View 1: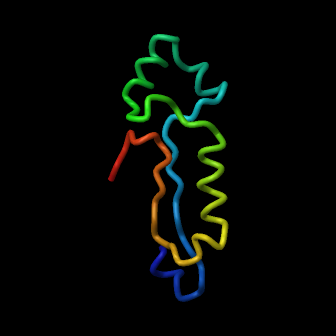
View 2: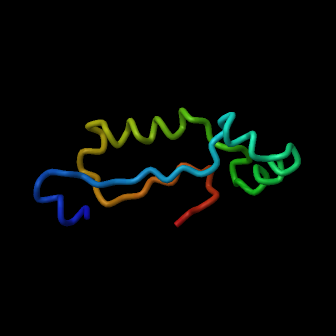
Length: 81
C-alpha cells in the first residue's frame, strides 16, 4: 500500500503497541498474571497510553515526512523485528 500511494504523497505507516497499562487492560489480569507478563517485557513494564500517542504524533508530524511503509513497535522491546 505504501508503494502504491507514495506517488500521491500519501504516507502509510503503522503503530503497533504492546501491552498498554489502561484500566481496561489491567482488569483482565490477576495481580500475579500482570506481574508475570511485565517481567517478559525487556524494559520491565507495560507502556502508557502516552507512549503510543507520542508515536502517533511523531508520524503525524513533519519529523516523519520522509517515512513510509514502516511499523513502529511501541512494546518495551517485547517484539524486535
